[in-house]
Length: 274
Length: 249
Image 1 (tube, each protein chain N blue to C red):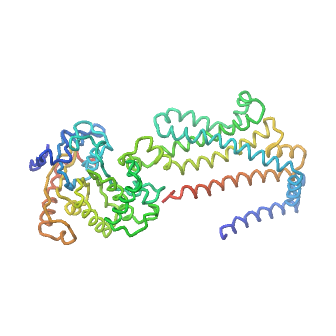
Image 2 (image 1 turned 30 degrees about the vertical axis):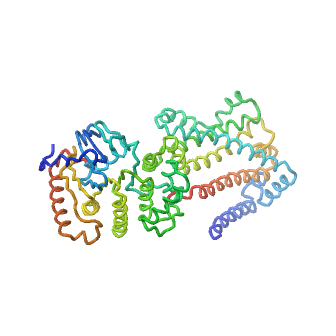
Image 3 (image 1 turned 45 degrees about the vertical axis):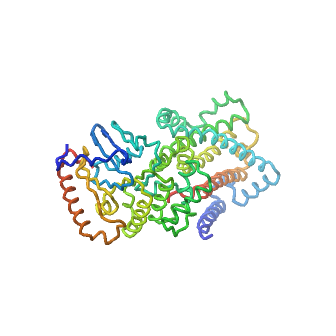
């Protein structure tokens, strides 16, 4: 299906290293196929960034993986298990509509832990650990609407990580934040994710961010979605603002842009629905 | 405090205009008594007792009808809202009876409940329950989808989502429905007191004052009913502010 270089098949990952195995995934909206026969393996502990043109189904993919959207066909397995048997965390793009404004920020973070039925002491311990990990300097006893956008999204991230997820889903987590806040939050997040080794699927429409945060970058085409390119990102961690001017980073970004432009130009007609 | 100056001036202006109209004898004094006379007659009726009892009776009936309406309307509305397809099926019936003047239902309720306390409360509860049900159902149906998904992804069961997310999401709209409901209950109770075999209540007092040409008292009771409606509305507005601190933020 791919009009591009034929690198559509993702790199084969030994089954015991694969945290996520997607086979023959099919999904259509109103008769228009978005995915058909889509395969993907994600290595345990990897941060996989998914990048592609608008409407290519990036969010659709992680929503299906997170069990928020039904699949029309195929399987998405986590070490052989269904998603409901796996501890997952999910950070939504719109933190304003994802946090519960009727309870305090700390209670938002405690919420999934209470659902898990953890004892009070364990819940408080985790809350403290997260506050230390993310160097929280604002008052978590405030209500979400009393916090800045960056603080609210940080609370969302802490809530998602509180359950110690096996897989974390990030759906454009920084797109509603200003640049400075984004840089801060990105730095904190990569430190924690790399230390805990959480398998992460990141959807972003910011190419620079996708490369900076990822171990591997998946470039998708317009609908019906196929893999335009699948690149390892081997830049050293931690990735700071100097990484962004690293020659390796710049070369990778240039290559991605070329692939992206080809992916957009490849199907100008039937993929026009954004 | 500053916010109270303008409304107070408006109210004073209204009384001044009224007084002026009586001074220049714009209407027959029997049809339009002066503010002072109205106040005097109303105060006297209070002092002698019966008006105080009438006010209490009306408040008690309204509150009873409202409590019944809330106990039925909120749970049923939330449940129907959570099952949108079921709500769509009953929506026409709800809308139809919501649009039916409650006074048109008096004869029916008289047959069902007889001539007594029960009829007045039942018909007011019926009207208010539909308003509360309708608002509660819409509150749930308009719940933000992202919050529901967030709860689901955190492992909340459908029952927990209803309790932890949908009810809270709907709370602002539920309170709006309750505010509209208690106002409607008061309207229906006062009309019912006029026409369905009553011996007390503000509605009964107004119509009796009118037939006895006690026009000062009649105006006074009308204002009293108005003040009661206004106060109930205000009470709910304050409750909304207090309990839905996150609304609009």
